[in-house]
Length: 168
Image (cartoon, rainbow, N blue to C red; front, side, top):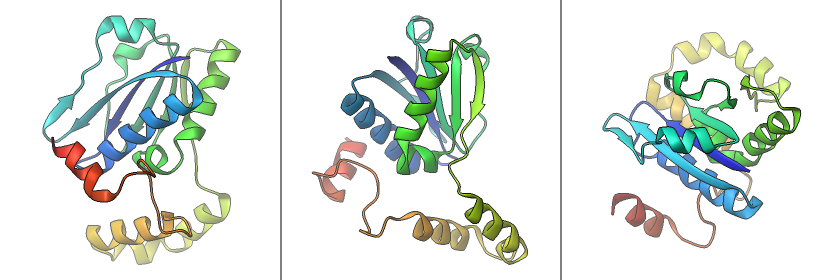
């Protein structure tokens, strides 16, 4: 399957880059072709061309900001959060493959949260509104980390190597 993707977060420095890297690695592992555009405060990197979008079987958007979807009209489109792109890119690809098999064009929102997490988030709504953005981000990151303490990225490379690649 040929996929184009857009990752975007408000700053576009770390999480959107991590989501892009995980989508690329997952596509390679699953045997898909992918090109990922990364959007952030500094603009777009690796911008998708009209020809690349036209050749794509599906579109994945892993974003916490508004991404214009006009250029993806008549394509199966899966929308998730940057967190989905970092922690569970396989689910995004699975849903995209389902849409392609069904021959459906249009947008589908992926809800990666369990019902129990949704209930807990609703119960904690008042408490969360009193947190600063930094405290909220820290709490979400801590809750999302697997038991091993390891998050997305190339499992064979350390954080330093990934950061060096990111900023080179």
